[in-house]
Image 1 (cartoon, helix red, strand yellow):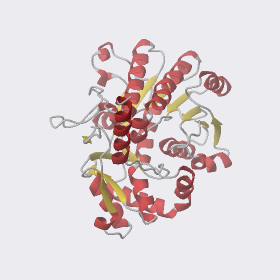
Image 2 (cartoon, rainbow, N blue to C red):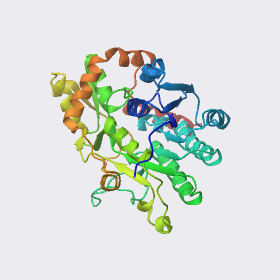
Image 3 (cartoon, rainbow, N blue to C red):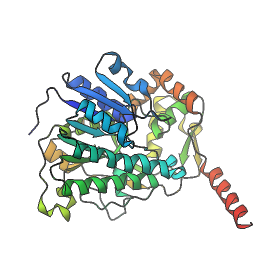
Image 4 (cartoon, helix red, strand yellow):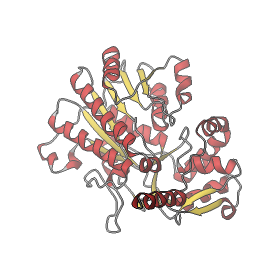
Length: 371
């Protein structure tokens, strides 16, 4: 059963990021009586412009704050008395996570814990939702048809490990503090408007539009499960407005019984096939548009999740077909070139040459061993 949808204060963290900003637009459009408090620390990888229209129209109160800073976030909770908290805030790029895991643990683990504690100790939070990732399940073995809410957490990169650590904390809170109404969602790889141009689709499009080639890791046959960000937002909305989920006594050994929901459109594609669609949409020859480069360390080959629980319990049903969604996304980046060009000018090259990086690390190791 759905909850009432009138007059609610909702905190959306990571609101200047890709999924957070899309969710803020979704909530603002669907629930005109909600007061949206958008939180973002505005790191290099955030774009306040993503929600500037909501600020101008009085639909969003923007606050620059770091979710890992306890006092700052406690002040937000006391001031706005949220009834719902949706935590999108996270460092979320595997490449950067390999180079700087400490920042990922701080934001993704300490930040998640801080929010949980504030929601638990400050009265009035009716639903606390932790937005996680399919990558907490790790790499999909050949004998595993898919992951679901009961699959073991088996993260294998610093980024996914930090998200898995947050998942474990949330699961512990579900069972230790049952009075706190808390949920977790996982989703397939998202794509769509406002995605930071370090991720595969916007990076490929922005490179090609600047006359550069797309760097394809390894053989490009890594397989991903894709979900359009707007369908993901619809799924989170369903969880957010569902009546309280009960925690069964058997959930301690059967995590699928916990209020955890996995979202997918059941649409898989290799990175190579994805880039072929992008090249085709831009009227570019695929073979002349790609460079096969050294793969990043510990790169997951495949992962796929089964959204059966979300479909059955929540009535979740994606609406955007993958190829159609990719083509529409490419068109968005073509039409909004000014948006990503400003980011590229501000951040510089967002690609990592793993062959060069490995050589540098080898040289540093050799120099150290000779001392």
